[in-house]
Image (tube, rainbow, N blue to C red; front, side, top):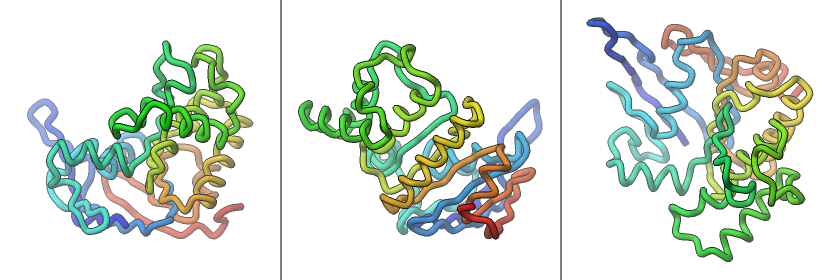
Length: 229
């Protein structure tokens, strides 16, 4: 479970202080699906980076299962991200010279997983996203939707407890977006994941069981009456 208390993040820009997050209090229970929406510059990606230990707050605490992530050393943060958190990004972030299989395997390298097990787990992860037959293809040989499926497999192969997704459908057409969202929702339900996603897409936000809106760094929460619809 995540518990954020008084999380504030400020940046310095041209002799002035710019607040990205202001006194954010938020609890995310194990197994939650939370969508974060709001205007550009409202703090959405900043909040996701805080949850993923990719940035630290200026003040406040970010507890994951009782441990303040913001106070961990860089080495412990790196280990936390490698073991427990899966990341999915809008731009896929695949290595262009590696096959789908090899891209997925890269997520296991920091964990010291042996080569044979890496291959087996990567194959299983690709099959779980419907790409078992495309394991040997380079990213340039895959469609945008297929590349995002590889990225999702790369996040899943670590068997994380949390998936953090930043605009995962932002580069996809409407039909592919719906396919990817159906895949993500299915994986969330089947695996009992905690799933936090940033999106600008209102049609996706309306589906979420929980919706957080960030405006000028301040958060408001509501339960969606049409969750899952």
